[in-house]
Length: 71
Image 1: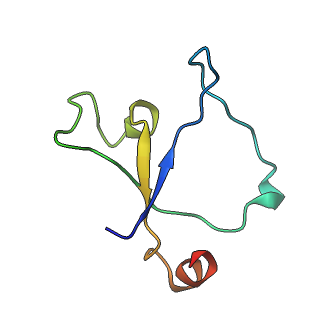
Image 2: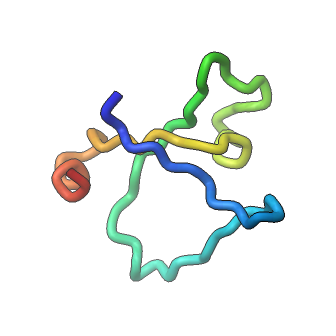
C-alpha cells in the first residue's frame, strides 16, 4: 500500500506503553486506519477501533503538507 504501519508499544508484561503530550508539541492531525489482516475483528466499530486494534496504517495522502513532511 505504500503506507506506514504504526504498532502499539507495550511493556514486556503486556501493558500499554504511552505518554501524554503537551498540546503545544502537536504539529498536525493525522488519519489512521486499523490494519484488519485477513478478517476484521467483530468487536471493532468506529467508536472503539482505536482501543482494540494493535496496528494502524498512517495515511500519508491525508494532506499535501503532511505528505511532504513524512516522505
